[in-house]
Image 1 (cartoon, rainbow, N blue to C red):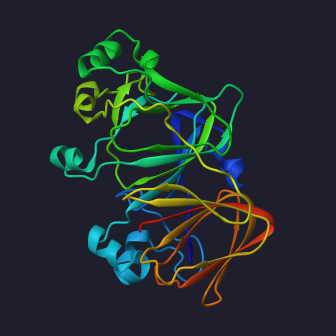
Image 2: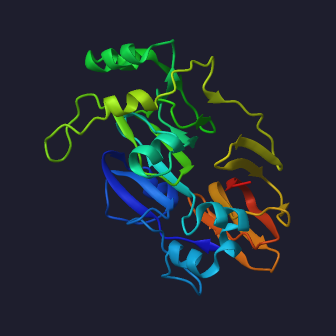
Length: 321
């Protein structure tokens, strides 16, 4: 099992919640993102402790292959780690964005698309986010609304609270807004079409590049009655949040020990400690202590895993089935 050094990213919209949440000391400010687990080129996660400390995630994959990823994942993704795990802290509204699907991303960028999900960690009073269209619009109406600064009027807007979940398939227009602190699980892809940025200027004093036209063909204009992912919270059992071709994510809100049988699972498991602290114990007896804000990568060769909370512990798990 592996812990990695967080990759902290300061942004023009970043806040000050991530470092104290993760209980790390840093002089870095305006940390908008912490990349917890990443195989993205130039942002590869580095093992933080243990005999493999200092090794990169791609080095582990090169050495262990299917033992780490799972046989099907190794065949499907090769040397690439297929998920990117982040914490995001928005002190200001993030730009309105959309991500292309696999087909369009490959055609335009020779890249995978990006399907993702958010789990709300914390929310300031009045915090909200945007996901999907609130009403039916045409591509032409969308483009006109960007031009006349009314695009936000067309989007579904949600007041949020800790524990809220939003699934964002590629093509769904969205924006994280002021006061949101979320965990994000996504396909490994850095393809983002920035649609609208409120006229904001970057550190260089210039407005940031927009991709309004590229986004036009990437957006899914389907209107849904509700874009929030509904689930029934429960203690000391698995609660499935999202199941899609790119990841399966579950929530464990634990006050007692919980065991997972992984013998039939041909995938790594990412474990993110959202609250509390405890220990992960695998079938070989290896133990890893975790606390709020830490992420652990469990290799696919692991046959069983126990979650042992100290008092209480809330975890998210993600794998690829």
